[in-house]
Picture: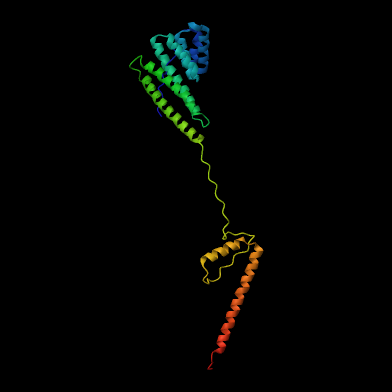
Length: 262
């Protein structure tokens, strides 16, 4: 991912006793102490605070991780200072605004965030774009300011697309869903095992009865209680035994009438 071009510059004050501690802390990388020292000097000076002091406060605040104070101090420095100081202050103001944009974009991307949370990030990116563009306009040999202004434009476009995507997702979640149709209840199949019913015996050999009668008999069987089904089975078994006995007797009578020559 492309990184922003930050202006690495020293503080502008040269010999002011009120800020000597701040300058020394800044040179040693103690940005929080430097920020506090410059802020104290600016409050003491009030409306007479110089543009250089306000710029130093803005630069230390940015390194301290306080983009709001950095942005405010840089804006005041640009309004009060000479053109060269104003240009540097605008560059720092752009960096501070973009830092606010990055923080707001992370918050807007959280699962529980509303889509309009991206508006805060978009507004901060627009402030960064304007500040960097103002700095770039002061001289032709400042490619860092121009690149940062272009990247702010790309950031704004990306944030707007993310906001639109978040709105689409939120709309799809809130859209009413059709109620599912109830599934009609059906009678259990006779093939399903039911411990309360005796097993259905195999169907006897086909004697020419139409298939419709078999279906009707099966349906009737399913309506009987277990005891009634058992009695029906017993009667069927008795009739089947009578048929077998009758056939056996007929075969024996036929064989007795045939002449034997042995």
